Length: 393
Image (spheres, rainbow, N blue to C red):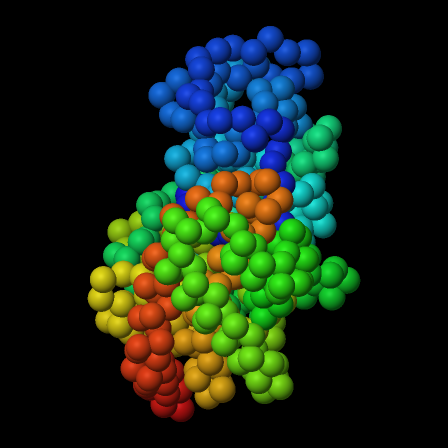
């Protein structure tokens, strides 16, 4: 599984010494106990984001999965939530190491891997992340600092980005249908649904006033004051709409929750794999489509991209009329969730507020486009969904 730019839906806290400034990885071979392999670090690639990890913790994680003392790690160039590094064995086999940075919430990891295990039993046209079993036969292991770690096989391909919207839409619809068949009735979903907007981060704790006060009183928001004030005004509006949608009883099911084109791998314009299932939640079914479209609406000419995506999505996905009508608001809800999340991370000292202030302008641009084009967007989605229904009849 390749790690690339990631979602922001997590109740995260730093792993190891993540509060240190980002430094370039140094070339070294670590002398360790007989139970932990020595790792050579690539000197040319910086450590991922703020999520650096102490060498000893990294090597502890690897020791659960590998006997060899001849391993090389290479930090990835993206990632927001976890410590993720490439691992190469002496025989040339390559994997992904993930050390979860989710507040030591093991239940989230168990939930993710249960879903991945069930999806692996379905006949899908693409790969989903496949965990390498530890030496003890488990898909993930608990480290001494309370974090979970796992090793994923790498899914071949490159990021889809905007190159294959219809194919990415097709795979998204296929996954949405597959997720509807997954049963985790004995497990509580650890990620809140999007409509519980202010539960997206523990520092907000479900209290909208915490978010609104922080935006109003923290002078660091002045770096994006016009954009953030606009977003706040729109968030207040969506609060009222959410109550209406809850009364409509929109269809609910398990969803990926973060399936956009930066979590899709393609080989020659065919989807080879879908990534990053750690934010799976029991949520409105339509959020799967809304999350995917929330990236396309930030492009220069969004509507044709959205149209092509929905053409693919309709091949497998299903939506009621009420869901279709809600999609513009649900796209915005995803964007608002990001804004609330980053605010929570800043309050908790897990990240700089710059993670939000640097994005606020882009978020505001997306919301404005959605608001100005909601009728056209709904019309496109309805047309494509109805065309496929007619074709199946």
